Length: 305
Image (cartoon, rainbow, N blue to C red):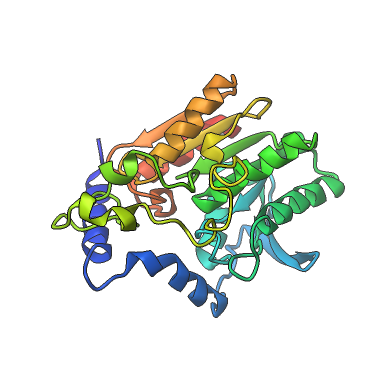
């Protein structure tokens, strides 16, 4: 059952983002433009040291607990439709993840984004970061990939790439609200078009009259083979994959992405779990005060620790 806070926030967000004053189709483009001018105001909490590095011109940040209690290391891959750079919300998320996972070290990758950098630059950056983590002596068996939305897509597609190249893989993957179907063809697109604030439509509108809008293709994927598993990991064969945990909202328009990926993982005998939270919308896990978010992080901890 959805929490009261979840119901209230979901209703407010739908009222805002489904209003005539908001053009949802330009949401990620506008967010990407704003992120380019974004100035970080982040200061780490007193439990952590925080350092920025570069790898082949790509920034990454290390959040290091002052009192480390585990050898686990997280490579955090942020969302934002592949158009938004790393922002302070994900720096704070890194702290929450670290605390949840017994104060692990978190690498926050500020991978290159579209349209300046097209596919597969994002996969290349992730693979290079994982190789660098191993180069400095951290064993792959201690590394976990965690991503939300496009970051969850990237966690899966980069691992698919490494598997197919015979490379070492991370020990586990956590996907928050996977954006895994670039064809935008899942049944939940229409089923949840009134319930998910991000990408849906107002109840006064009919899905059949807004078919093109609901099934629009991201500019990131327009020139790509959208059915390729390296682009749409929901369609992938997951043979040989490490354990994967998919956590999403039952009311997401992208719910089908998670369901398809999970079904394919189970077909490949992957240790996979799918957790759907009643009534919750895309990327609800980034809002810390929801009871559902607390349970999502408890699930993550159970699967990793």
